Image 1 (cartoon, rainbow, N blue to C red):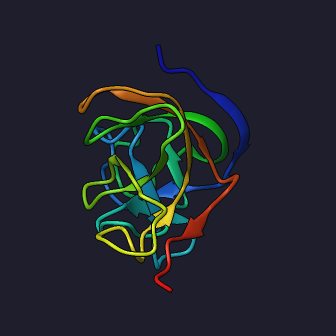
Image 2 (tube, rainbow, N blue to C red):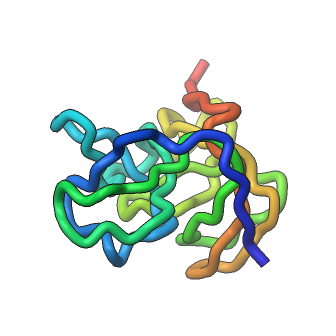
Length: 135
């Protein structure tokens, strides 16, 4: 069963759009001050995981930037995997190798409790973020 532990939630965060169907998805900083939007690029940097269901642009958004959180998985995640976002804001495995499809992807943390695709995993966020680079 997925669980959470808040170490840091971004104060004053606002939704950039209706995110009511995106609880436990990855979000990024929008270009508008204080606003956060759904991650839409595979492997991009993640500001945090959305904890609530803001129903309109400008509504309060609880964005967990550090700690332990649930996240919706797009594929099977296994305890110990590195994880990052796909182009729909869902968690995916990021291979920390120097070749392959994950080069250039940002790692958001480790999987604590894995899950199948379409389920919620328990993950760390904001503690060991890095970008997979080629050599």
